[in-house]
Amino acid sequence: MKWREKWEVETLNTWEPPEVIKKYYPSGLAGFDKEGAPVVVIPFAGLDMWGMLHSLNKADFIRMTIKMIETYQEIAWEQSKKRGQAAGTVSAIIDMENFNLRQYAWRPGDMSIAFVVGMGIFKSSNTLNP
Image 1 (spheres, rainbow, N blue to C red):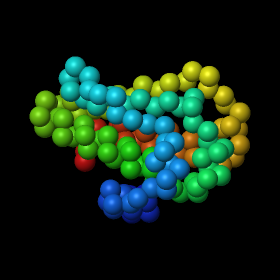
Image 2: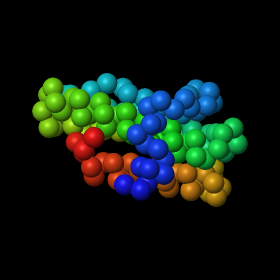
Image 3: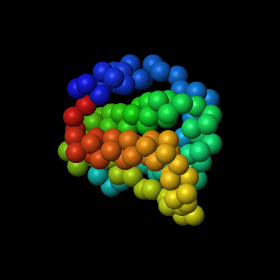
Image 4: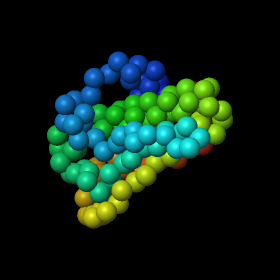
């Protein structure tokens, strides 16, 4: 796919993200559900999009998002080989406590989040396709 070429998805596992994104990117593997599928927690409300995009460029934020989605999909793929097809999905718990829409009304912030959400929807429709 062209977007995979554009974002160099196949080489993102060797890409070293900037320190600020490693430190503050809101995502993490919490464990596995009863079928063995990965469960990801995204503390969305704690994300300072304005600060994040003033500390790095939007492309790095998008690269990190793709890298994380690919990582979780790879974990799901490996789990499906061990535990069956039901383990080949990724569940996300999105923490929206104290969420403030104001920072996403800022144009670069809303475009970045729109891309991230679109990536999540696209990847979720391609479960078990490494």
